[in-house]
Length: 207
Image (cartoon, rainbow, N blue to C red; front, side):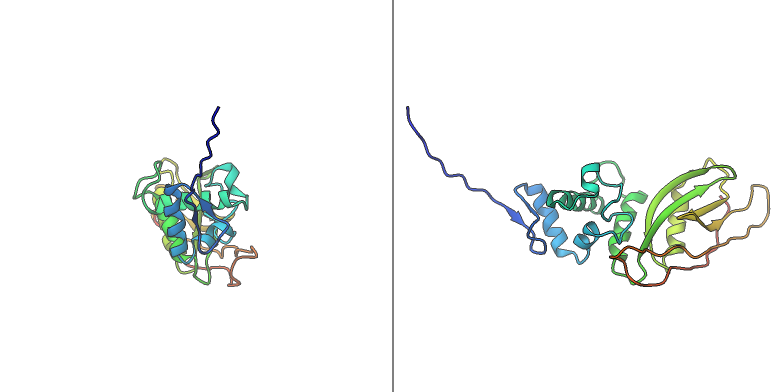
């Protein structure tokens, strides 16, 4: 019998910003490099300021949603990376899901950045829904983008954010509409900014 001793070298990629984030996978190494080079990626996936992509967001696989383990943090960053770089297999480049990821990173540093649960309603039932981030100044644009995405097969009467009506629509057959926007509740998470709740006036179009 022979005894053979071998020395194995491991190449470990480590985040400069979060040294606990490490991997031997080259595919994840590019995620770490991207997150280190972006001012808000690690903040976004480690905190709760972003309702769409922060900790506890349901966009992530179950085991990675709430965990502070380095592997979970890296998984959340990987998901965001794939969306932003057009590598996510279940969303096209022009989809609202890719747009949402890019929007979150673009506006994460804004003073009034927050997020909420957007929902379409017809006269009887709640319909399409999506968690989106927004600011006071971008709320009308975010509503427009949500409106483009929501289900067109229902006679939409209003859109709510966290249960508050922010846009209303006329019933089909009526000539005019009254659009009402109320203030949306602020992000009260400890990691959020202390800015006041966004309030905006927008003009809706018939569904």
